[in-house]
Length: 620
Image 1 (cartoon, one colour):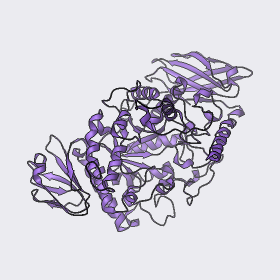
Image 2: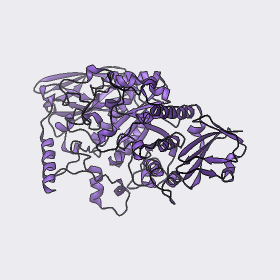
Image 3: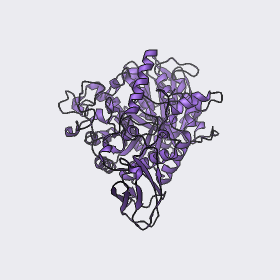
Image 4: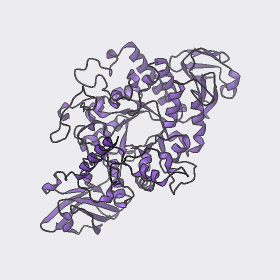
């Protein structure tokens, strides 16, 4: 173990000691790469990077409505910060920046006009059905960008789980029709920004350029066009955001503006990943510090968001992506690991600029109260933190639906756990803003977890598309893709048919087996029904205490519409007592099974087959 720690420390120090990237060639870079007039916040912080630039005097040529309020040096001689003020009267155009030092440099900085289309940033809500996919593993629409000269991973190898496989934005766009026909309203690709890391760059969570789409997916303009064409097709786009860390090949880490831009340790120190220490009144201060400032992984430096300059850099970047593309929502990676004061500032400034922007955070917490702490909630502030995040990825519901079909029922175990997780919705400002799911790119696929029992997968899907919140499906679940997280690449396999020459094409009915087609049809039927019946989107949820492995709940509204959902996890038929549900069945005489079309003519006799889900449209 000591030897292992030694090698971790050695790698850590070598990574820190690497020289700057090609910026030393004399080029100049300014982040943000351009900006807009008419933004809510009139202040703009420009980070200038060029060899020896700190020795220069920076000036701004006269430009109506724009003033250079100050210039700030950092520890590195290769950076300057310019603080601009852009008044509401400023017009689009080119700012002329001059830098006078050993040699004179000039830079034309663009101010653009904003896109003022009223419905450009749509947000997400309970009417949506999110499809999560990994762009490198979904479909390859443009083989010419598979290998990009100068990038560390300069090959494609579909036979290697950790290598790049060649999927891209064009591949996703080529299958918009497939997604729409399935009932999907919203696409969530894992991060698309550049990840020029030497290994496993396909997953996207170690970004190396905040302002650049990975060229193996396409260009920045390709992404902006992708969002625009998705909107034209009635699809929304979720942008996967990484706030807590970056990749070790990012120029900001290779040539650090200042040591305090990162959380530094004498030797490599991981986060303890236990967000419980943030609210634990008995927690050791050192463990709180390790949670917030420890690194996520060896090649993922932890960003010091308590530095206001760093905080501004990050906030401007994510505002930039929304304004540039018109995307609809953020999924925020590893939300609890970020500095909590920064999170409040981030939420305030982004939502002030884009009030309709959706935001959900990844919170793999233990317990509903801890999860609710990171969403808008009724809880008192802890250490001055009061979350302004609209919703979270509902891991507590995920844990419950997993237990429902892998464990025997108990007082609050097995399928009974579903009831007790939703019972705690009172902790949230609005639990319907949470995203519910069966699996994702980090969790073993649900079909494998339930022993490849397709009846149990149907039970899970029925719950997913009828419970409260915003449902999210992981790519391929609808065609029986499976596997466990050992290693992660096994649950991130290519979607069959996404590459020319694939032996099987699951994007088409002709390419699916009968079992795959049946599951695809099941998802499509429920998703399309949900999309056309607002009672499953916004209707009140009334749930009943489970019994004998059966969990029953209703979605209903004041228009007299109602859907009864019965999940029988038992290996035997169960008879339901209509009297138990009299308050919700009153006035209804029959029901139609949404999935099969079968009519139940008499609600006084309810016998649910073993391992069966009923989604019943109640009829008068």
